[in-house]
Length: 110
Image (cartoon, rainbow, N blue to C red; front, side, top):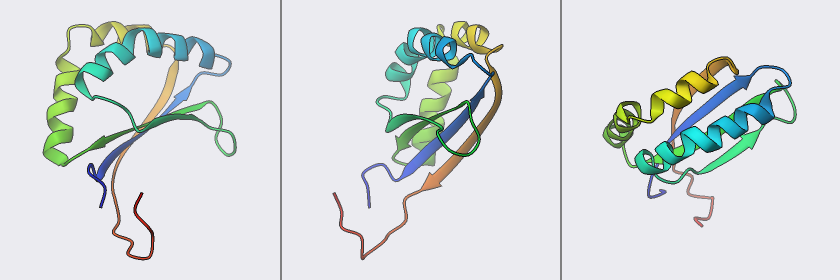
């Protein structure tokens, strides 16, 4: 079982032809806050097949309580509203899923 078995799987659908602008705003305004409050992400991905214009980011947590604590810290951070305001016109939809690691005995641990 991984050290942080709970993953926040977020999918933002970005307005057509605005991904570059969104990524710039995200890097400049969101990432400093997220690194302080959520720590390091599992990764970032852009959709290639299926629904397009989607930005996926994954964040790992030790537990639901850890997720709630760090999410509240993010939301309460004084710099976070600037990101929300700057990205509002760029995001057309958001999906958030919490997924838990599955114990798979036949799969070797890394």
